Length: 135
Ligand code: FEO
Image (cartoon, rainbow, N blue to C red; front, side):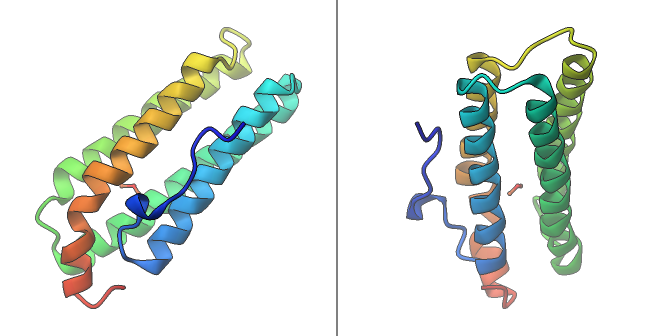
């Protein structure tokens, strides 16, 4: 079952960023499917690593434009990014040491965080980016 389904309510009206968000959603769905199919920790660990790497890449894309355009909300937005990377990295470390497993609770956290972050926090830069010519 698909955990998150992309629709227009996720669109920040910037093609490059919408594409990255779609990729993040598909990676979370892939992780959820792998967990449900009972895949081993080696497979799950690989997907978690890919998800973290792509998340860091995605955040750096947004932050590059914040700096380039002087986005007023950049400090609090960057803090949200940093807190998420820290939290997921801590989870990954514990997962790799087999102290915790991937669970429905973890998947729900990832899903809810991403949905909320895109639809609330990211959405705030949509018009600002468009006004700076980014579409
Ligand atoms: Fe799309 Fe602020 O992450």
